[in-house]
Length: 279
Image (cartoon, rainbow, N blue to C red; front, side, top):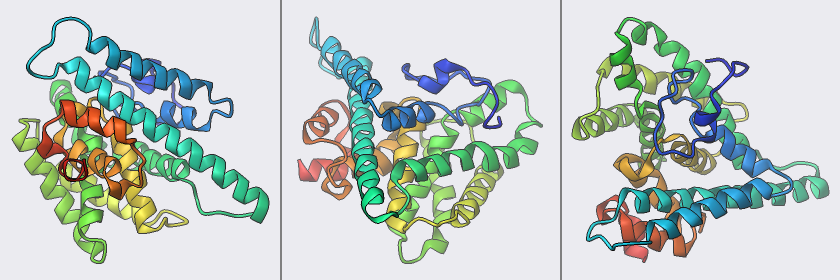
């Protein structure tokens, strides 16, 4: 799908924790609307997004108490975490605007980096995978692209974190992590497709101009993985590689303390190791 193509609003706005969009196959799931919330000068869309997430959390706690956290509670907790990230990015954008007014220049803001990486995934990476995906049945294609983009981004994020001084090791690590993760979660696997996606994505990331600092690229990749994932509460790799660091002290309080408590209440502690330690 190209940037100018019509996109299904249900996928772009992505309030439901699933993605069945055949127009973008998940490449543009959710993240563009989140950037719209970040950039809304009135803040109205952010308020609506935040209030909806909080209402879902409250509604999920009504009625009979279950021993295990319900799907609704898990989804609501990650929705609130997303709203925290959106609010943090909006504050950063406002601060950057003030600096630009005063000094005339600042580094790219997180929303700009997220957009660059998102377009890279939706255009360069997706187009390079087309020959491979075009040769399989429609059902197989749906299986292979299910959670593929958040797998890709979260694995790269984990790779950057683990090999900050040896970034050349990131692609091999990321591909192995995706293959192992999809195997463990019984998702469809095409090893050639995964390695190709990682190789194209990493090469394209290293060619971004201007190239963000390692820390800024890491943060933006984590955020995009959370935004693009249909259901972070069901995706261990996204939670562990992206949500957890932004909820722990390492994330610089991007996800608020009270939200971290909600995440720890409903998600397995091994999915949130850094948050559990700092709780």
